[in-house]
Length: 158
Image 1 (cartoon, one colour):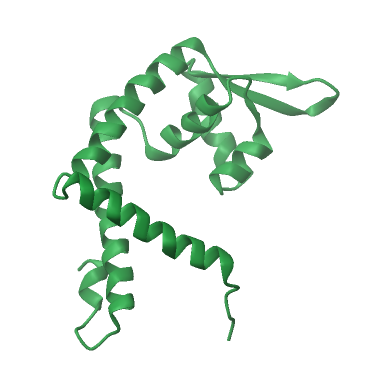
Image 2 (cartoon, rainbow, N blue to C red):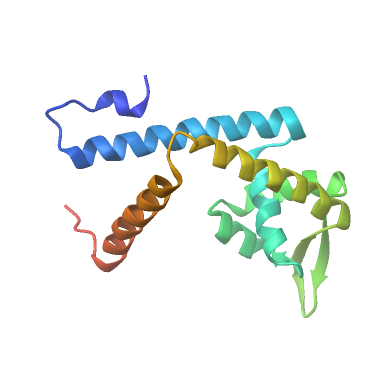
């Protein structure tokens, strides 16, 4: 049973929309995870870490990676250890801080990530092929309005 199946016609439309968005997110993520595993023998967390590093050619400190990925330092360390062992990322000491490391993609890692990123983009584009280009733009704009409202309005807590 997917998330959307929890909604009923008597529920507010906003709740049904939320459940549909969750379901779609889960479906697309499942497809991406499967494709990454089958085509590149990697995982989504590894892809995400490499994506963060691709945006910062000089690398990131481990704590910055953890914050950007919204996971614990232990998770980042485990993934980084695997990628270092495979020669896809490298660690370098941070000058002036003997406890900190900066992590960056190796040339091999940059090439491999580029291949994965191109495929990832094609999978995401394919996920929305059921919509006309104008519909994709409209949906993007509408969801942007929801995001802006969310950012402008403090959440009420019970």
